[in-house]
Each structure stands twice: as C-alpha cells, then as structure tokens.
Picture 1 (cartoon, rainbow, N blue to C red):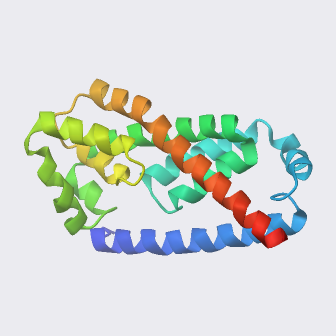
Picture 2 (cartoon, rainbow, N blue to C red):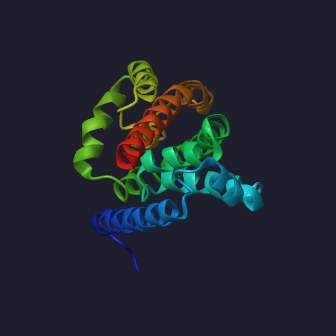
Length: 201
C-alpha cells in the first residue's frame, strides 16, 4: 500500500505528539525518583548503562534527524543532562552527524518524493529556490548549519538534490554542527537548571 506524502507528514506529527507526551511522563517519573535533581542518584541510575546507554542515545539521535518525531531540543538536552556537558555533547554530535549523512544520501537516492514525505510542498519550495546557483547554495547551506535557529534538517535533504559534492557537505556538517549543538545544549541546560531552581524555591 502506497502512503501519500500528506499522510506521512500527518503520521509524523502524530508520532511527534505521542513521543512528546511520553517524554513528559518520563521526566515526571525521573523527577519523582530524584534523578533529574540529584547528581548522585543520576550517576547510580546510569551506572549499569555505561555502554548500552550511549549507544541507544546515539541511535535515537540518528533516527530523530532522519524521521523527526522527537523534538530536537529535547534530545539535545537529554544528552547533556544524562551524560554531562562533555560526553553529552560528543554523543549528540556523533548522532546528529550520522543522521545528517543518512538524510543526504536518502534524498540523493530517492529524490524529491522522499523529502515531501517529511516536509510540506510549501516548505520545500521555500528553500529549493536557493539551489539555482550551486556556489551560492553551498554558502547559504554553510551559514544555515552555523545558525542555531535555521531549518538545517530540511536543507540537509535539499542538499542531496543538488550537485554538491559529498565531501563538501560532510565538511560543512562536521565543522558547523558543533557550534549549534553546543549553543542549544548549554542554553537548554542552564535554562532547565534555572527552572528547577525556581521550582525548588
């Protein structure tokens, strides 16, 4: 049975809502256990998950880049909260870079129909116009990867439709992603700590 792009996007929206609800309930559960507010309890909770935990987390990050059913900000924050700022950044970086590479090749192989299963035609048309000049698109893409609020997931897919060399794409991703990941992760971490401090008061 062939699924229409509109049905695929609707399914992704539903799965995003479901995953967000699940994450909220998990956060409440971990809050009650004291895991989110007590470093020693968190370390004890992760003690028997030192290998499988990071592997699962990286895989989750890869999946959420390819099929964005988990809000990216939440997964970035989870990496920093559970694994610390250094290891969390490292796992976030690996997962997002791997996911970005997969998205590029999926778009290059399956073309526009694949992209329209994930984003609307309106969004696609908004950014595809930048590809008329390859050189300009390369610079535009690089700047968007560096910008924290840019729609980089969409642009990663569109890059796969262009004549951009994979070596160029890969270089932009591995050099540009660390800055946005660090900005999001630290911003969300300090924001969540401030919120927890307010609640405790």
